[in-house]
Amino acid sequence: MTAGTCRMPDSARIKHHWVRLCIALVTQCALAAQCALAAQAAPPRAAPARTLPAPARASPAHASPRHVMSLSLCTDALVLALLPPARITSVTYLAHRSTDPTLAAEAARVGTNYGTAEEVLAQAPDLVLAGTYSTPATRMLLRQLGAPMLVVPPATSFAAIRTSVRLVARALGVPQRGEALLAQMDITLAAVRRARPSPAVRVAAWSGDGYVPGKGTLFNAVLQAAGGINVAATTSGGRSGSFDIEQLLMAHPDVLAYSADQAAPALKTDTSNHPLLLRLYRARRITYPPLPLDCGLPRSAQAAQQLQREMLAVMHVSGGPR
Image (cartoon, rainbow, N blue to C red; front, top):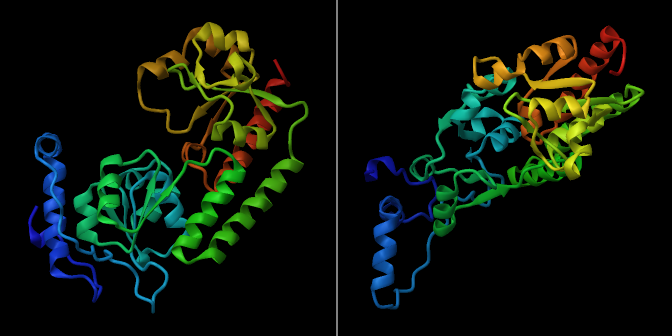
């Protein structure tokens, strides 16, 4: 990395040694093991007192961040829903490659990043959005630099979605936009409640590789809102876990739910096409959009509505519960 790729932010308070510090820290990050050993061997010494300038902070005339960068897929979706493209420096390559058409179309209007510290330093955002589990090395370095960063925890319920949206919307200076998205979410959820099936439909989210989401997951919250019963939440203490075909059949779901992006040839796809499953569940399969069930978003309410419509259609055609 060279000084030419570490562009200084547009702030009068940023000094030339900021660029030099960026280069030094990135180099140290690349040699982390050697640095750790050297630090243990070297005797402690006092460091000269100095103040690190705030990197790319907004000026008082622009209290809201003007250049925002996202380092995780879920914060990609949030920032793209809340801000115009002109205020977003980049979102992750995952958003650009997403099978979700809405997200991919929105991401195409902004830049791309791969979650590296070098990209953050080069793009010099006023605010970095990151997930709790995404890009840990980059987040650690940004904390050491004192860079403005907001870490957004995963949302596994509609209450948590409200908290996340308001947290991010306030940080971006667009609380009204956040409330508008939540109001639309509430309208959709109200419509979903009015159309809940009776009796409730027993559903297994079964990807073919055996994993089933249990209690405390976003899938469980969305399915409950749609009027379904997550069979994994009623077995083995309700925890997420694994089902083989025998356990799946013993759970006796009315419907099998598959992620909409599970179309590519794979071993788990072959498992889903097991002759016994095809005989029992060929007409009792539904799909769900993966993004709003993996990431807590206002759009998760629309995912609940889609699940509900598909459940009702399957139950109507197949003649009710098994």
